[in-house]
Image (cartoon, rainbow, N blue to C red; front, side, top):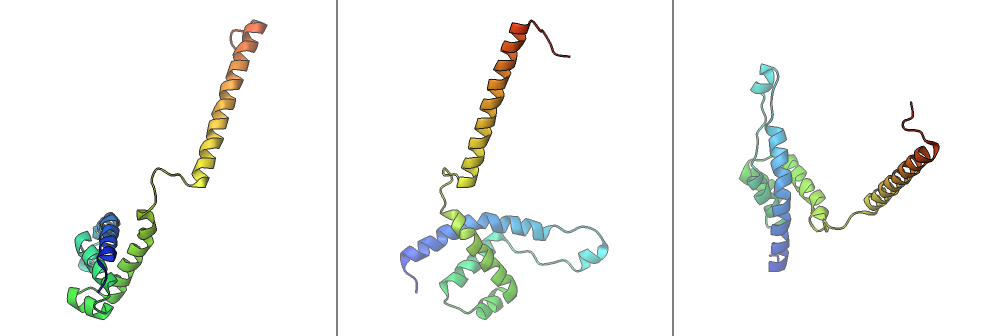
Length: 137
């Protein structure tokens, strides 16, 4: 059995991953085109079911094959769900207020460029006044 703290972390993690599973469910649920595609339509699973199954997999009380049989979902699909959840885990604990260094550098470059454009615009206006030119053709 897992400790209560680990259980809470898993629940927080699954709450964050639910949105990813909703998007995945929406994409899988989209079908269109020929009638042949409608005949071979795929099963769709709710994000709630996916999160419950992934939580069950993280608890490690049952094997993947037992969970697969219990919920009627193929093992490869369960592994994809687990991998999706694990990929989304680092994003749950990042601070949205902090920017990564690449974005901060890009913002600094943009600010410098705006500053240069403003300075050049002022210089151009000053030169136009001094030369007596109203507009450049």
